[in-house]
Length: 223
Image 1: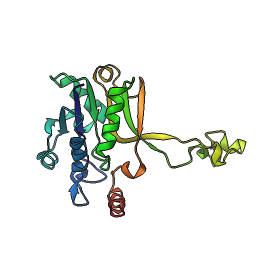
Image 2: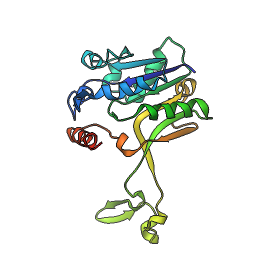
Image 3: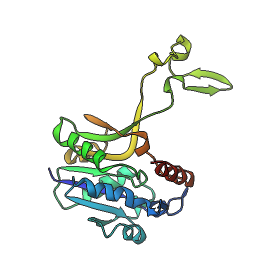
Image 4: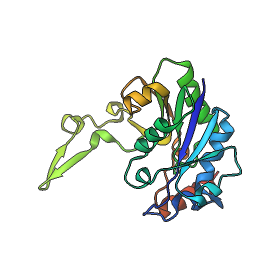
């Protein structure tokens, strides 16, 4: 199976300036995930999709190529929109596609290999990295005019004991993988048979603010 991997990394972040090249433990943020993708040895081609010379310079010594991200998908479009545009523009032939967010620096090569194996060895259309939601979702409520309105039945039925609490998951942002033809048709990773690979919380850190950087560095310092 011939597979293309893309790391989308536009410039212009607002909450943390120059986020994709912000130093994390002395290394540009984008370099963490790029090294993991390269070390996984799962992909025929790895592209850095960016509109910034500085971002690409941070990883250009690795086994990657540059994709010049179009202006209109660097500012207004979602990451998925930008990835679909890239797929539509590519002239090469691939069987599968994957993208990795540089804001999830601690994804490990073995996590990527696990996802790739699920995609290539099982009956599925896509594979997404997942992490457990630590909060007890069944106790969630909304409030309207100071009225407490439970979303689930657990509170009203007294089912708040741990034996009644299910585990819930969310995409970790580490990776999204799919069969090429499926993704081009559906333009979504969750409209077919989607498998999940659970990533431990310590490797599911998502960087958006300076506080996230400090937490990630603290986490790395404890290992």
